[in-house]
Length: 253
Image 1 (cartoon, helix red, strand yellow):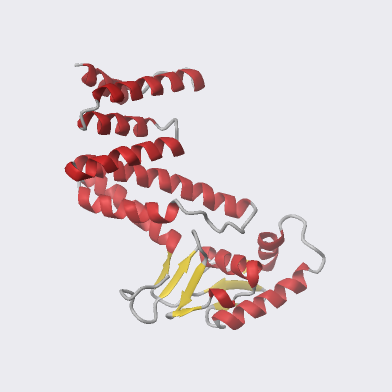
Image 2 (cartoon, one colour):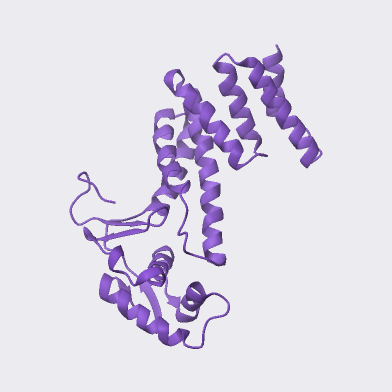
């Protein structure tokens, strides 16, 4: 997870894709007690620094129908995880909280921050900055979130990351269009990925139309509009928004 560019003693947590935890420059994820150890630590990372009740952790680990022995099993699990990460990191008895050594880099938090800044950069017309930061957000958000996790809390995070991925693709396609030149193929690819993830998102169709047109594929851009119009009529009984209609009219002219 870490590379030679990372400072010694770094703290990093990766919850999307391969689960990985590095505390103070030391990899500890392989020492955690299996699936439940990973889920316990992952949940506490996301809820830090708030205190979490044991009842909540039992639901995270066993769902709505925990075994009678769940409280005792949780106590054993907490002890094992605390032995791996240290008592300064995993704190509390009746309720638990996590304190990661600073500076801590948690992939989903890095992605959320990058996306927020990328959207601000788009609004300001800072296209190169938006391009870089939207790629950072995409890299995290497109990967599966804690595949072992089940339940409402995990599904909530998956929905949030899916939305982040769509917004990052939108930022990236917009930045690529504005930068032009060698970035134009990236705009078309990102717009197509965006429509695959969110078929009814009109901004995605608009970005695809613009990307196709600027690359000289006006007929394909017109066809993209017709596909959107047909989908909206069939699914929602509405026409494309005014901005998309204006872009279509401009293509015809």
